Length: 101
Image (cartoon, rainbow, N blue to C red; front, side, top):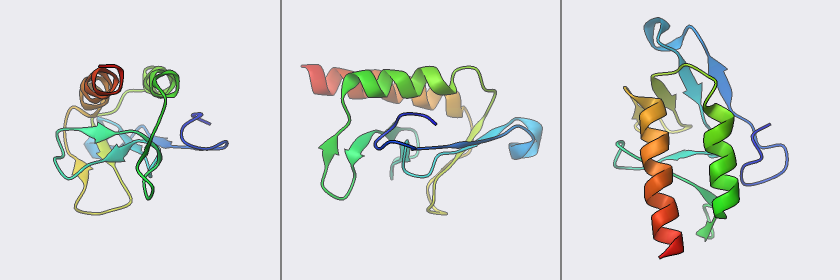
């Protein structure tokens, strides 16, 4: 469990995915957004309720031990093809700045 936007929120790490570079299937715990250079974090995507900073930081820490290059969302057109771990880190920093300013 990732302790994302609801109890029991989960992601799947696929070590052999992305031609052996690793992939993370994020569902909507970490949402791949239309600009696939970023992801976002929400408590409720349909209702646009932001996820608190502590939960975002926990998600970043939860995926840190895993090697992955690609992020798969439930929507085929929203896939991060490269640098998935860096995308999550960069997105978390941007998100946290936005909710704390």
